[in-house]
Amino acid sequence: MLARFSTVQPDGTYVKPPHTKMSFGGMLFIRSHIVSGAGSSLANALTVAIRYSAVRRQGEPDPATGLEPQVLDYQMQQYRLFSLLATAYAFKFAGQEMSSLYAQLQKDLSSPAVDTSNLPEVHATAAGLKALTTWTTADGIEDARKCCGGHGYSHVAGLPRMLVDYLPAATYEGDNVLMALQTARFLIKMHAQATSTGTRVPQGVAYVVGEVRRLRVDVDAPSGVRALLEARAAAWVQRVAKRLEDAEKRLGKKEAWNACTVDLVRMARAHCEFAVLRSFVKALEGEEMARLDGETKRAMEELCLLYGLVRVEENEGDVLGPGICTVEDLERVKEKVRELLGR
Image 1 (spheres, rainbow, N blue to C red):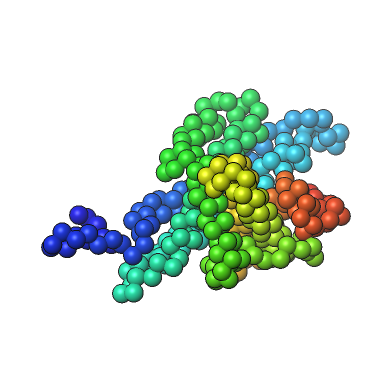
Image 2 (tube, rainbow, N blue to C red; image 1 turned 90 degrees about the vertical axis):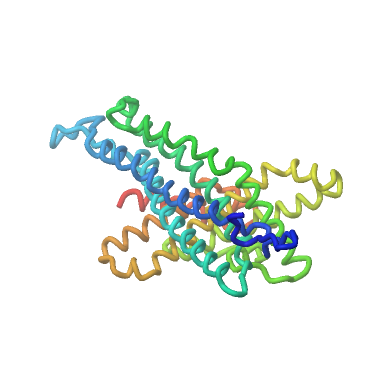
């Protein structure tokens, strides 16, 4: 049968695998590489766009030198490109984390006890990250092309081909909306499991029942920004779980799910962006980073901050609405982003 976990006995009896999703191993392996590959594809486009922006000069000449300013000196160009650069690094670290989770999962499944406890979380995380990274990378390559102006249309730049080659990633190995909804279903299930039965949930989603409260916002520490995105994700899960519960009373289970899919996808995105930042912070604390020189490590920490803070800035309502932070806190977030761009 070429089956690893299910068998047919001599008398014809079919023996099911210990878990219904155990056959997903190959798919999880591919999705972990899609996540890491998204970071590489985005980095390729940014290499072209950032180098072009450093060479290209345009604007009012400097009276002292007679030279026009580099396009990369403009803050908006920095915001567009450097935030994507931070994202490319974040996706690479998330991909490495996914590969480690997959390796551990294979080890658990190969043990005599066949431990499947981590399988649902790994499957849900891989599905959501596949959606987030391919969506973001496709949009990011296009933004990189736009940052090169008219030259970005040229095949010499390589950007049009990169974009066309990458676009199918949003569809193959699972349509992204469906992938995000798989993650959402897992999050809702974990929330219900923790609140209704008190059953322990996996560490990676333990936040779903955490108290959503005002945080002391630390914009200078990766761990502080991680706490912001964790609280944002928790607020989304708890809000959507309540909305879904209310809808089920009026519409029934099937119709209620359909009526909440927009929020469910946004909830999954908030979870995955937190998971990506968590992987970045974990990488900063790892042995590989410890071997870097001080200047390089500091640059990586600043990219980590930039990735997380831009997520907060672009989703202000997600942290203001639940009272996670104040308008004054958000102003400090924005000031820190501008500071990081100027370094």
